[in-house]
Amino acid sequence: MASVYTTSITHIHASSLRAMLVVTGGGTQAIADLLAVPGASRTVLEVLVPYSEAALTAFLGASPRQAVSVETAAALAQAAHKRAVVLHAAEDQVVGLACTATLATDRLKKGAHRAHIGISTATETRVYSCTLTKGARDRQGEERVVSNLLLTVLAQACGLDVTLDSPLLAGERIEEHNVE
Image (tube, rainbow, N blue to C red; front, side):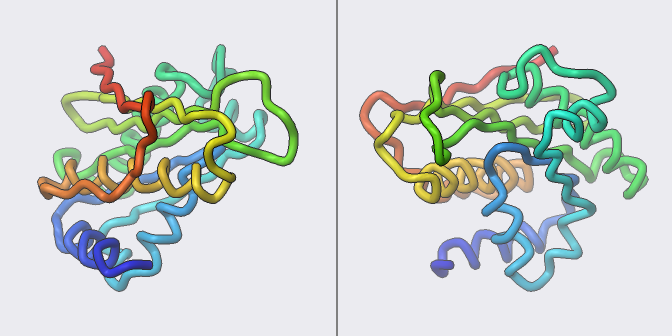
């Protein structure tokens, strides 16, 4: 892990914000990155990877209409925030952070490779969406882009002016959605 990651994650761990993370389909490298830097226990309350459809449904309490969508990312982040409040009673010091993604795999996919990163606080829920150029990266390359976006969203929630390198290709962009 490059020093920019270590420095940024060290600053995340030094903030007062605590996070519950839920990732499915992608974003798992962000978990490893957070846990690899000393001080993770000051940031990470809990991590959940509901990878199967049954696990995702169990966590949300209902089957989502579409596993990889803005709505599902928001629902995951909101559920993660509720859990974070249970684990750390100071509601204003916790976030629910979620990622739902469909990335390159060992078989041809019909749809786009995309990710939705949700973050929920006591006052708002936002989702950041990115559609990746299909076939332009391997699984690890797509995972890195998504994980860097997830870490950037967490860093910004901590009040840090950090953007971890997520090299987007021509035509790729990140869209922000405010969720009611």
